[in-house]
Amino acid sequence: MVDYSETLRLIALAKSGDETAKNTLINQNYPLVKSVIRRYRNSGLDYDDLFQLGCVGFVKAINNFDENFGVRFSTYAVPMIAGEVKRFLRDDGYIKVSRAIKAQAVAINRYLKRLNPQEQQPDIATIAKELNMTPEDVVFAMDSAKYPMSLSAPIDSTDDDSITIAERVADEQDEEKKIDHFILRELIKNLSDRDRKIIILRYYRDKTQAEIARELGVSQVQVSRIENKILASFKSKLR
Image (cartoon, rainbow, N blue to C red):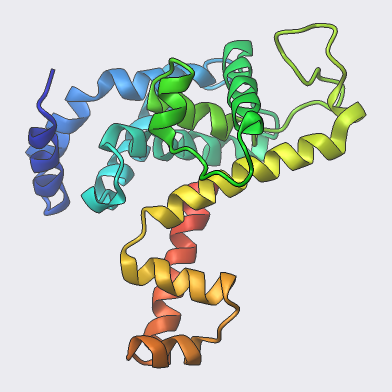
């Protein structure tokens, strides 16, 4: 087991251009990359191609990771690895998701639905502990809920007698929105204090960029650049 402080040290070196550190991280995280790409084994791509795509996503995770995000690097890397594969497969349309992963997504949905709407939504670590899953599996299962599915597919993939998606489109849309909102809250929570304030003022308080600039004591151009950078980051993580 590699000490996490050593992982952070290697990430810092890799981000500064140290190829040895980057290759060490890739070698140490082979199991993580393989665990993610294994879920796409029915996509029609060769395993070697999937692994290469997974490594590309992993390197992007290294380059974009910040310890201030408040999550472990492995948890952050999972959607980056999966996102790289999904972007490649996107034009092919349907992506097969295993029954086990669908079942995990259903379990997460049910757990979140049981919570009091007035209570603070749990973070990834809390969900993982509650459902006896790893944080990485929680991230992947929640992301899988956005995959295309047949309208004739059952709501509960573990129950063949479950009603179909077509029979509960409105309810499923509500569930999808809940998951999207949850992921968005996680992304906002992991922003720096300044960036979080800009997003809250802009999209939750309906303030203009000029008003935010005056409040923060910066130029409107700076606010615009920061906002665009944040939105681009959100877009890449929500794909």
